[in-house]
Length: 112
Image 1 (cartoon, rainbow, N blue to C red):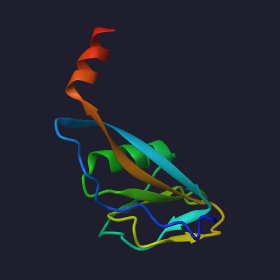
Image 2 (image 1 turned 135 degrees about the vertical axis):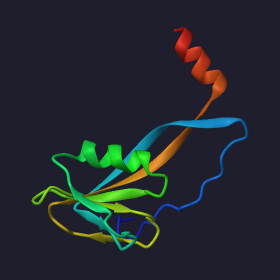
Image 3 (image 1 turned 45 degrees about the horizontal axis):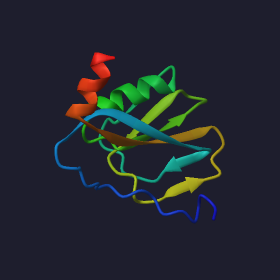
Image 4 (image 1 turned 120 degrees about the horizontal axis):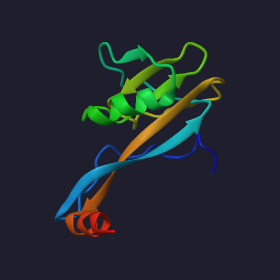
């Protein structure tokens, strides 16, 4: 299988009962752009990928982003299921996944 053959991740995930979301997991696709799903004024200049991640994490609508390294431009995406454009040198795409953490796990972690 190649990346071009891989099915894009679904937009909807089932949340386990009693889970809360407190973390994000990111998947990177190098030299790949997420097709369409831009929304009005969803792009901005960012000196690094961490700025794109931070903005995407606080926006519930954001499912991922494509980052153009040469222009340092971040394009936030409202969906990631319309396919990926491969072979785009200098463009990396990141897909956000919320990671469920149960309240019990959070309590255990805080106690050390």
